[in-house]
Amino acid sequence: MIRLLLGDRIAQLSSPNPDNGPVGSCSHCVQTAYRIVAVRSRAGAERFTSLCTSHFVEACIMFPELMDMENARTRASGFTGGV
Ligand SMILES: [Zn+2]
Image (cartoon, protein in one colour):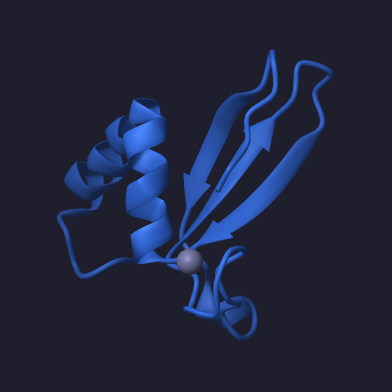
């Protein structure tokens, strides 16, 4: 599960890009990554966590802002199946 420390915030939500090489697996299980979440610490350091669909849904429950970002992405792209 993603852990947020004091002062951390979710900086960015992106899709794994197959053009940049094989899509990796989830940081928490063996499923293929569905989203990559960038978390920025108060000191400005960014770290990335790959999440499969089920772990992404879990993360959205814990961090509602993730769901807002997902919804914004879906609206912006006119949902095409995950790109
Ligand atoms: Zn997973």
